Length: 579
Image (tube, rainbow, N blue to C red; front, side, top):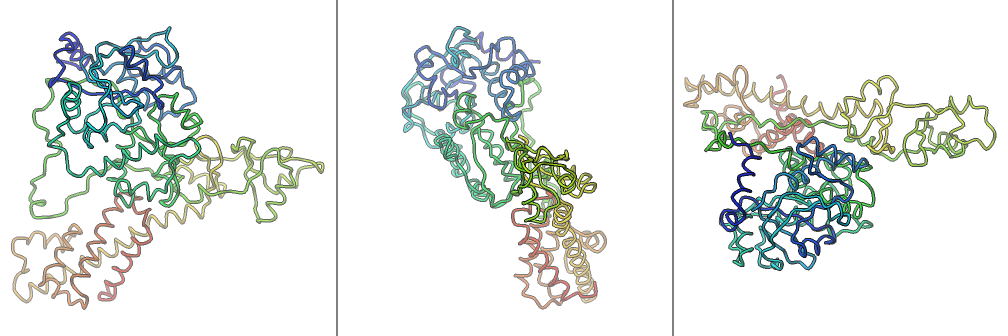
C-alpha cells in the first residue's frame, strides 16, 4: 500500500527534471500578497513565499491537528471558518506541494511568473516578517503576458486564496507549455459555456479591487444571478459555496440566512492575514461569515492500489422505472438547518438604550412606543440585558440616574446562526428572546407570534399539496375505471401495475402529469379546462412539490409558490367538490 506521503517522497527522489514538460503532476498558484509585497523577494531569491507573518516555524507540524493548533495560537481573534480556510492553504504549502510541481505567481504588472518547485518547506527566522515561510523555486519565465493565456485558464487565476491548486481545464500541462515558451493551445475538452466560472472570477476580481471604504455589496437576489440562479435551491447553494471556497470569498451576513432582497457584503477570507486586515479593517472573529467548507479537508492519504480503474460514482441508473421515464427520487442533500437569522424579526432594528444613557431616555422610549421592555447595550453595542417598567418603578433614583443604576435583568439571547428550534423553549417560557450576532451585538428579537407565523408558512405548502395530491389521485383512478368500463381494459397497454399502484398507494407526481397528457385519460376525467394549460400547471406544482422536500427552498418565492398550489387546488375542488 502506497500512501501519498511516500508517493511524494518518491517524486523527490526522482528529481525535478523528470517533472518538466508533460510529466508535471500538479500546478499551484501562490500569491505574493494583495499588493505584491512579496513579489520582489520571490523573483529575486528564487522562492515562493506564503506570508502569515505572525505564525512561527511549521517544520514540526507533521499533522493536520498540530498545524491547526499553531494557527489558532497565532491568530486567536480570527473566525474558526477563516482558520479552517488558512489551515487548508498552509497544509498544502507545508506538506502537499512536492518538488517538480509547477508554481504560478501573478505579478503586479499584469504578467505571470511560472516555475518549478525545487525544495521543501523552510522557515527563515532571520527574514523580515511576511517573508519567513518559503519554498525554493526555479523560475522558468517571469514575464508571461496574460494575453498569452486563454480565457478559461486565465479565469482560474482569479482565486483570492494565497495558496490554491490549479486543476481546471488541463491547467498543469498548459502552464508547463507556457513555462517552456510554447503557446497555450487551450483545452479541447473544456466546456463551451464558462459563464459560471467567469461570473465567480469576475466577482473575485471586483472584491480584490474594492477598497475598505467601498466593499462589494449587492442584494442576495443579484448575488444569486451571478450563478444564473433565481432561488437558493440545494443545487445552487452547493455550486455557489464551491466557487466561494475556490476563490477565497465569503459573504456577510451569510447569503443563505437573510431575505433575498437583503444587501450582503462579499469579502476575501482566503488571503494571508496581512492582506485580510488591510482589506477588511477588522479581524474576522467579529464577522458573521458564510459557512464554507475548507477547500482541503486535511492530509491526503491515498492508497494507490485501492483506486478503482472506473469511476462508477456518476453512473446512470438503468432501472425500469427510469427507462420508462418515471420520476426518480430526488438526491438527498445535506440537511439544511433553518437558523434564527432566517426570521425577519431576528434582523430588525430595535429601539434600545445604553448602560450610560439617562434612565429618563428609557422611560421616554417605552412610553412613546408602548414597550414593556427595552434591550440594554454596553458602549460597544453588545447586549447586556433588558429593563422593564418594574425595574424603573422599583428604582429609588436621583434625577440624573442612568440606565445602569436600575436593576437590569440578564436575558436569554440566541445567536443568528443557531437552529430556530433551539429558541422554542425560551420563547414559550418568556414570550420572547433577544437575538445577537456572533460577535454579541444586538440583531433583533423573536416572539411567539414570529415563530407561529414562520411555522404556519412552513406547513401551509405541505397541507395544500397533501390535499391536492389526494384529490388528483382519486380523480385519475376514477377516470381509469371509466376507461375500463367502456373498453374492457385500462387503455394503457404495458403499465397495468402502475394503474394498480395509482388506485391503491399512489404514484410519483410526474406519473399524474403524464396521465393527464393522454387524450383518453383527459377525456375520461370530464373536466372542462383546457388540457394543455391545466397539465402545465400541474407540472409547475410538481416542481414546487420537489422543492418543498428541502424544507426552506421556497423562501425566496414562497408567496407565489403557495399561490400556484392554491389555484391548482381550487380548480380541482371546482370539478370535485365531494372529494
